[in-house]
Amino acid sequence: MPYKHFGNHADVWKHIALCDVLGRESPSVYIETNSASTTYRLNNSPEQTFGIYHFIGKASRVPRLHNTPYFAIEHAALKNNQYIGSPGLAMLLLKGTTVRFVFFDIEKAPLDDIRDFAKSHQLETKTETHHEDSLNGLADILPGTPHNTFIHIDPYFIDKPGPDGHDYMDLFVNASQQGKICFLWYGFHTLSEKKRINGFIRDKLTKGSIGHYLGVELILEMIRPNTIICNPGILGSGLLTCNLSDASNSAIIDYSDLLIELYKGSAFEGFCGDMYREFL
Ligand SMILES: C[S@@+](CC[C@H](N)C(=O)[O-])C[C@H]1O[C@@H](n2cnc3c(N)ncnc32)[C@H](O)[C@@H]1O
Image 1 (tube, rainbow, N blue to C red):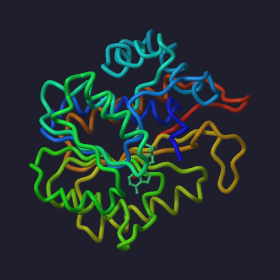
Image 2: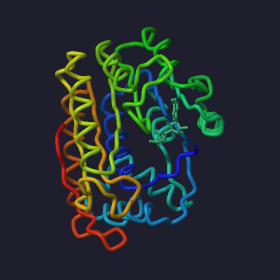
Image 3: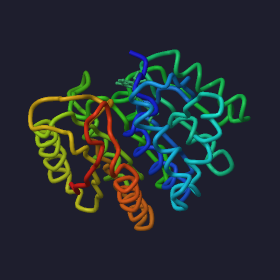
Image 4: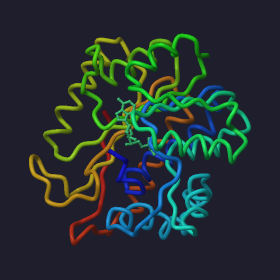
């Protein structure tokens, strides 16, 4: 299924943090497990209005958000009614330093789009696309990559096992144990779903002896224990990282503060759009 939620508020949170830490970490290899496309056509959907349009409209008055590479890229894209997804952001930001880009997707169309984008930015010799389940494919290439390999893990479900019984949290733990820089996004629609996912993540981290992680969640006030009263794409989402520098982890926390401020007093379809933060 093509990715439809591009440009929503959770993409803003994931992508502003991603862009900042990519600049700080300057990885020699960038791997994305669930890539989707580099570029999307915006259609002014309510999700996008609450997401990228709200961000660009308000952030121009907040220097710490306005002066970010994410703002610069998306502001330029918006003029053409476009939103740049993470493969495009990573290639634009890392094109001068990263020697290898590896993108996985089970759909062919986004990988074609990634190859076109790579070509138009003279990155085709550095860019690999893998048309396969990344739960299988990544395990094969991970051991041959250097320590400062950045792995962006962005599946729909972090707890759904693949054909060999492993899930994306196993991959996160395995890559973290190997010293790779790991950046995982997860989402939830209700507080009971959040509780279940939090328990699942903590259990995997404990069993994998991963103590040095950061988990930061931004949650909409409109989230409910078991029901979805309205849906701006997702009602809460978290960024889980391991082996990032302290400066990168601090930056992620700073962005969560700035976005909470940016959404104060906002609304989505008549419901309060305020957010709060929790640490995992
Ligand atoms: C949420 S979208 C990715 C969004 C993108 N990372 C971004 O931030 O702009 C998820 C993508 O994962 C792909 N996908 C789903 N299951 C997969 C799997 N097992 N292996 C690789 N890709 C998968 C889907 O086809 C979809 O394009």
